[in-house]
Image (cartoon, rainbow, N blue to C red):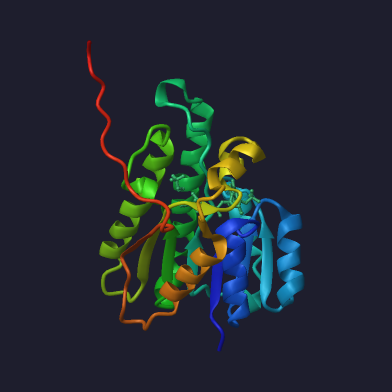
Length: 250
Ligand code: NDP
Ligand code: 8X3
C-alpha cells in the first residue's frame, strides 16, 4: 500500500520538487501552500487520487485545522511530514532590520512548524512515521544580515534533535536537512521581489537546485526504518566558509 506524505510549501522550490519526487514514486501527497493556483498543476500532473491540494496560510491555526479536517479519506494517516514552508525576509543588519520581517519569519519558520508538528504527532506515532524538517546552513554558520532567519533555522535544527529525544522508542524518525545555497524563489521572496538581485546572487555560482534537495528528502525518507539521519548538511561545491571578521580601532 502506498504511503502518504504531507509537504508544506509545495507551491515553489524544494516543496514543489518534492511533490514531483514523491508522487512520481507512487506516494500519496498532500501538497500545501498559500497559492492555490500553483497547487492545481500538481494535482493535474499526478491526478486527484495521488495529490491532494490544501491551500492555506500556515500561520493561520484555524485554516490549518480546517485543511487537516478536509483531507479526503484516501489521504488520511500521514506517514511523513515534510516541514518545508519557510522564508527569509530582508538582509539588513539587526539594527536596521524591520521588526515585521523578523516576526513573519518566526511566525512561519518556527510557530507554524511546531503547530503543524504538534497536530500530526499522534498519527505519526501511530504509524511509526517520520518528520523531515528543512533547516539551513544558516542554523550553524552566522553571516551578516542572517540574524533572525538564522535564529529560526537554529530552532528548527535543535527542535528536530529534541523531537528525536522525546520520540525515543516510538519508531518515529526525525531529520533536519540543512542546505546551503539553492536557486528557488527564496531570494526573490527575501528581497521583496527583486528578480535582478536574485539572478545576480545565483549567476555563475552553480547553486544546488530544488530537485537536488528533493532527492535528498526522498533518500532520507526511504532509508530502511532502523536508520535515522539526525542532520544532513549540504552545499553546492562553489560555496564554502569565510573567516571571522575583526573591527579594529584606530
Ligand atoms: P521558495 O520561496 O521557493 O518556497 C517557499 C515555500 O514556502 C513556498 O511554497 C511558499 O508558499 C511557502 N510558504 C511561505 N510562507 C508561507 C505561509 N505563510 N503559508 C504557507 N506556505 C508558505 O523557497 P525554498 O524552496 O528555497 O524554501 C523552502 C525551505 O527551504 C524554506 O524553509 C527555506 O528557509 C529553506 N531553505 C532554502 C534554501 C535556499 O537556498 N533556497 C537553503 C536552505 C534552506 P506560498 O508563498 O504559496 O504560501
Ligand atoms: C538559505 C541559505 O545562506 O541564504 O537558508 O541563509 S542562506
